Image (cartoon, rainbow, N blue to C red):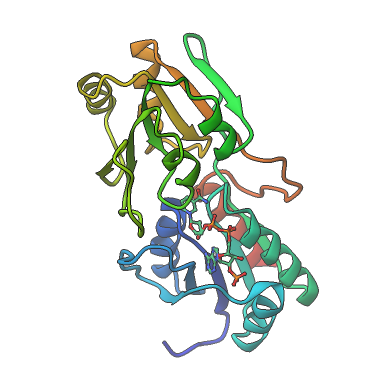
Length: 252
Ligand code: NAP
């Protein structure tokens, strides 16, 4: 696309539903030229309406060089709440060049009445607290399965969008599916598979929270892998809030 006056170049760090929605909404707005950046974890990423670049930048140094080379005016970080390295790198790189940085991050889920959550600080802890013989519904994606592969004294139904790259042990069943999921479907899955416990990350967001409602309705315990304490400020919790900030930024 030919850049005209008053267009700002936005690097949109993505890999989330919110980043996709932002790319869609900003691509309809001629004030912005958006370059969506994906880590390249998915073998077959969905198409996006914006320009796309795929793969790591090479740490803070590589990202700083990229921001300079591409004359980026603004970094929007809409990565997953658990993608902590790229967020930290983006703050550092943008800070070095005085490029504005805005972070969109969904609020964490909070346990309500009837929830039986056990908060744990990481995937390793989550795997360690599983009771021997239990049937586990695991929804943490495909990158951090190793501690669960090692627990051959439990049966695991692991749901993810794309299959893991290596071999899968016999006590783990992979279910491939893409959100959103309805509460009644989640209840049915948990009942059909005789699930005793749900293990998930506190990702937040409406599109995947139905499993929590299903677990509550069935009285099932949830092992909740919590986010680590982060010092990076959250500027917006929703796409709408982020767009308001972009409008303000453009006006100044
Ligand atoms: P991470 O630990 O924060 O980042 C590890 C490295 O991956 C970064 O240092 C960077 O490599 C590269 N990277 C990550 N996100 C990138 C992006 N959007 N564009 C370009 N490079 C990126 O990240 P992660 O937890 O592995 O997550 C990877 C991607 O999956 C993110 O885009 C995230 O939004 C998405 N995702 C993550 C989770 C999760 O549970 N962690 C869940 C759903 C989606 P360099 O240092 O070489 O630049």
